[in-house]
Length: 184
Image 1 (cartoon, rainbow, N blue to C red):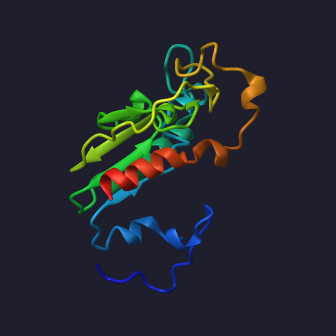
Image 2 (cartoon, rainbow, N blue to C red; image 1 turned 45 degrees about the horizontal axis):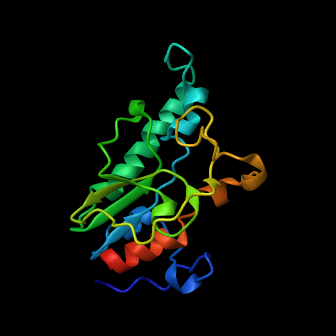
């Protein structure tokens, strides 16, 4: 692997030494042993479906649909990268997006975090992630406006409160640890 150019600046997450702030597609030109990608999900998940479709499931926002297809193309660049071991993480996608089937669904409560937040993994050359510590979920991390993930007694607004997009998109430490230990 070639060294990462010094012009790439480190980014947050509490461990700036572990993060690279750069154009991810430029980084895909380098040779990697393992890629774990977390591409933006704004336009490809079912969370935005009510903005794109009417009740008859017809597209009503062609601009959002165009952004969805651009997001899908970006997502696929990671999944199709020249690397033997790849994991791409995202929430369940819209069927309309046409992504390939995901390999696995995981939940934070399978890795010692007491939350429900359904997360899909698309895996290439990697085994499914094995749960490390299954705990009872307290509540749903993200409110669902139409899906089935969190329309349960576990959705208690007093427990969850409102989470910012940045908070909702974070990977839980228990999941990240399992990825590092099982795939690293």
